[in-house]
Length: 66
Image (cartoon, rainbow, N blue to C red; front, side, top):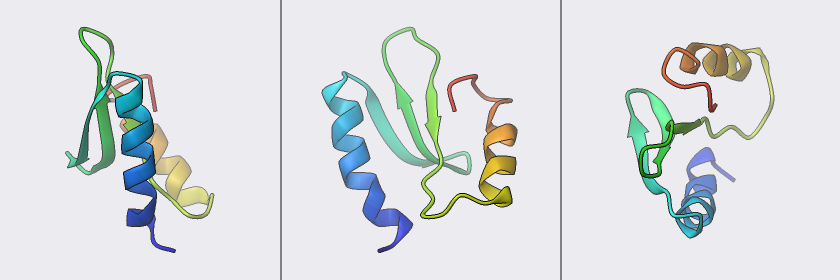
């Protein structure tokens, strides 16, 4: 399995919640926006490690919903 395999089901889930979903936006794996709400950023990873935690902290500069 690759990280990119995670995108279609996540996109489908977020779209079912009325989000507009885009992949690979400003180095973010997934960006989801719904109306005037704060955007949601998702980093797709197969394993939890220090790198993904550091990416998540970095993405907090864009939105609190990481």
